[in-house]
Image (tube, rainbow, N blue to C red; front, side, top):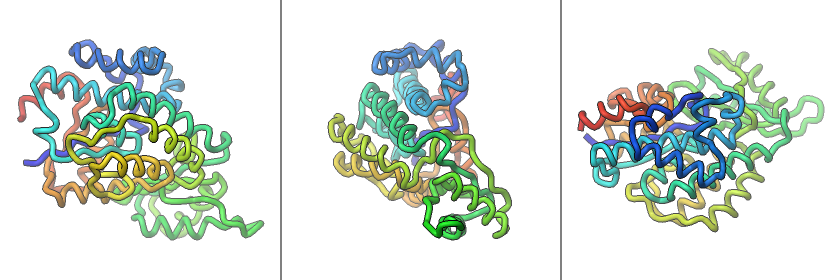
Length: 319
């Protein structure tokens, strides 16, 4: 049975996240301390005590989700002698989760990943003026239909000028998230309803991620990644923007820059990992979003999540 470790993205955060891991495992506690030190901020206190509005700010959410995921990985290593390089065939992460995946595989150290994700969150927030961008979920639409809807909704009816509206996440199971200029996303919701999409709704996000409007954030990440220490991961990462294996540090840098404006091809990532022989998908960190998607994208595979001390112990016993 080949194992793939997958790492969650934005939306999986919740107040209290990781606190039980820190209480149960010294190795997990050390991860949270490392992140706090790297950011010169008590991010762990915000994660454990809130307030939720502050935790949901993307500059906090991104390093927080990575910290939770890496606390699980370090607990597995310390408590069960688990060696990711020996036991896991592939890693992948949804959006910011790609940084968690690379850190788990040894490409980044934890402090570097925390600082990069803080910068990524800030740069994404700054890329568009507040209230000018939006994202929406199309439920009951596959990627080709979502792209047709975006193309139909892009022209501003008054000026005829095309506005940005693009497929941001192809999550699979008939779930596509679109992103772009607020007016264009709102038009796309109306077009989706006309085209018979089961449900189309705005998402409560602070910026239009994974679309061309994020170009300033991509530039900021290109500059930061050029200076960051990035090693070859111990196991290949399946990249969001190509849905293919990546191991070369220079190539990974390039993919992480493209990922800021590119579509997260999650459905294809899962299909690629299954085609490469992975039949056990383990979501590492907060929430169970990817575990739910796995059941739709790879129904033949086993999918489980590890985010709590009990789940860490159960997983170690299952090996």
